[in-house]
Image (tube, rainbow, N blue to C red; front, side, top):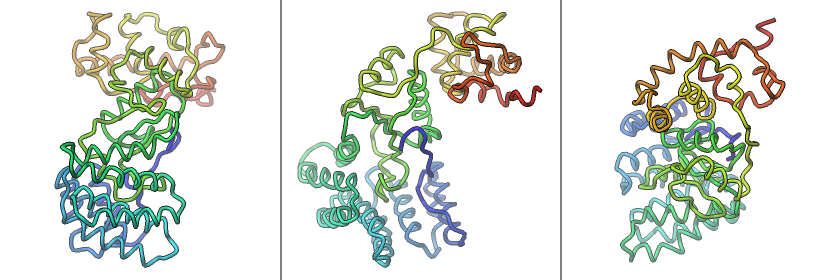
Amino acid sequence: MDVMDGQSPTGLEGHQSDDDQNVRQAAQLLSSGNPAAAIECLNGKTLNLDGHLLMAEALWTQAGPGGTRESLKHYEAAELAAGADVSNVSKQAAVALGHGWALLQLKDPNAHGKLAFARDLAQKDGNSAAIDFVDSLLENAEQVEQADSSTEEATWAAFVKAYVTSDQPVVFMCGSIHEPLDEASASGVARLKEAGVKAVKSVNVSETGPELPGGLQTLSSLSVKLPQLYLKGALVENWMKLDTKDLRSLLADAGANLRSEESEPCHGVFSDGLENWQIRLIDLISKRGLGDWDSKAKELQPDFPESPKTGSELEEAWNHLAPLVKDKLEEQQEMPCGHSCNTCPTKHDCQLHDAVGSVRDIEDLA
């Protein structure tokens, strides 16, 4: 679950049967934001356990955050399939928890009993995160039914409570650090990297797995703004709008694993002949990578009024600048630290190489 992890958005295991090929295709359609196509892909097919879970998720997503009772028959079928393998308690617990969560969202009176059953299975399996999640849901269920606040918000609060169990920094997002699934999560990853984060625990709310109970992928469609950053167990409000230095200071105070600050970007030594705003743009891209052009344009404007004013103009300017930057990278000049780009121990943390395309390694230059 940290920055080195990268898993399938659905967590479904791949096999070679036709049924599983349909499941994988439907999972791809759903993850790309097309639940109707995912449903069509699975309709009329003989579904296995993962297929029923995926159909439940697709129906729920298509219906919207409030969900639909149409999903319940697929959760029930998934439970029957999971129960057939008595040795796989982990899967039984995950499916029961997903079923119980759906019942709770629909304010079904059977929700409490199903969640209690899921808790018993999770306890038998030794899944502490699932146990904490169920406990939080059961604790808040009665209050939620009587309160004006939505069940979704209470569900999210219970989910977070189960996963923020220490002072360790945690970011909740769609996708992984390496493969964010939406623009907001990609921007969040970029902000963390710019602040110098080397490693942080991340929770991908769009996947299933040992730490995210099956059937809860739809948490990502709740009316909760992601990504969310928790430091010392508390939500950091509007953290993506913080000044980079302020964000780094908060992260450092919370014990985050940060890179040492550098007095000068490496690429500063080969920026001769470039305008100041171009040098700053190269710096931004080295830290955040490509994309998010509107945000970069707005950030450049206060200090460099002569820089492109719109995201599309800035992207076009970068397309003209990139070949020059690539040529300079391939010159392999020695930096102030004594390394060239290809011998730099932190080369893979710099996004400039990916941004300009393939840069020849030292072996290619020999």
